[in-house]
Picture 1: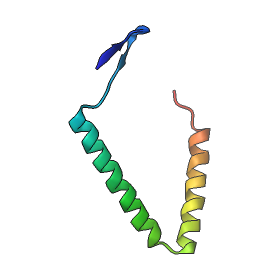
Picture 2 (picture 1 turned 180 degrees about the vertical axis):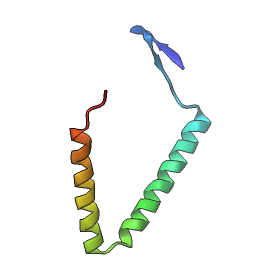
Picture 3 (picture 1 turned 45 degrees about the vertical axis):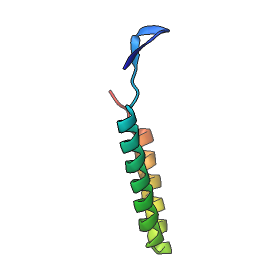
Length: 66
């Protein structure tokens, strides 16, 4: 963690080499899992997933955080 030289109220946080390696591995595993799931889905399931994600995205847009 380092202080932002432009604004001392902000801090810059970077992963260690070990943390970056772990993040890369997790990301790779997640991509592989997602590809496997999508490859096993039929067209109707993909369309339903697309519709559900679109509805979810609209709900997120309409939700205001307080």
